[in-house]
Length: 544
Ligand code: GLN
Image (tube, rainbow, N blue to C red; front, top):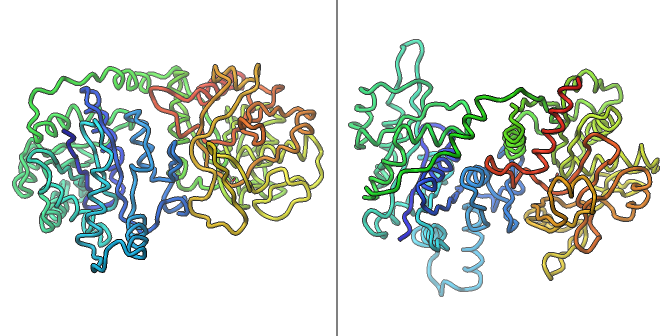
């Protein structure tokens, strides 16, 4: 029987519900259970694909090409289970489906309503495709009390009635603020948040209380009493130094044991947490540190680079070093008198991340030139790779008017709009006027690597699968000219038409990839490109 855990949040947003859900999933998995994690997002966008990274952070892409919430990235990193399109739903998508059905006449004249049509669609989503999974963990986005969240709360309330007894558990994440002037921890916001939940028919089984300080026993008792929750189920969730220590911290506080108790499972195997202890040890005892400069457009909101940051840390774990990040705004390098040296001096490697639009593009091109000429390890991802190729075209191959058609109409279209490509056996076609949402080249594609290239050595393979999210593509017509100038096209799509990887063999470490390798990196399996990149930064750190 599949059991369901619903994770809701109260008091304020940004309490780390995604990580809490992922950590609980990891703990159940460590006990031998099969888990699956899902995110229900109450906003009206059909998916986060067209949302600004400043507002919503990174768009996480799954193998099957869904543009989804960044929490799915946490789920994957903590459990190793690859997320799918069917693991993230939004109000927008639900309504889109319902309205399409209504237009087709599928409701046979019925009045279409939030209850039961929207709530049924949410319940169908939660229950769909559970297979032989032991626990499905469903995180509800937003905070209890949000108007748009109501149908989701109503749906999980109904589900709890419809499932077998002991088949669903509600975990509510709250905050216990500490008021320093009064010297007291306050439980009232938590009480109100639970009251709000109970008023819509949901009695949480477990309260996971985020707090900066240890929660005194008396306060836990009080919270239990006022919130109608057993005291043992009021779990302290202190800030952890490293996110990969959260599962260990929650286990110490008894979270997984309490969850199982609420399901009536008293004979669960003890968890094997050895791999989490290993990670914790590595994080706490690095051999040294390296500093990576990320030169990007969205650096004021690190959430926009969530998977990238994590993948860099995984690369650090693989090399037993701590990775420090230096954020550099690419826009600052757009102007002709930009002083790159002042901002980049001392960085042991440079990362050019993905991005969209003109702002900061020149800055990225200049950064690529700086790293190439100064022989500093440099890793370009997606847009970063495209700009590195434009730089190589301008300055290595001396191609006049080299640019990208993402903005303007360059004389030499080094990077151009992809109008046709193949996905499996099907042909995908796009034009300038195609909708922006969901029409990029998305999801997992194969790339074939050149024998003897650095990337083939790093991957230990000549065929790889990586996730994509882009609309433009390096123009294969310039391959010969660029290769003659010293930029090797070491990875191509199987039909040889789409450049996937470029590298400069005559450089300590200079690789650009069209895909997003950061999306597949996990703490237990650091992505080979990130391990190698941080390895190169480590070498560089001993040189400077
Ligand atoms: N803007 C570029 C494109 O659409 C790169 C996208 C990205 O970096 N993810 O092709």
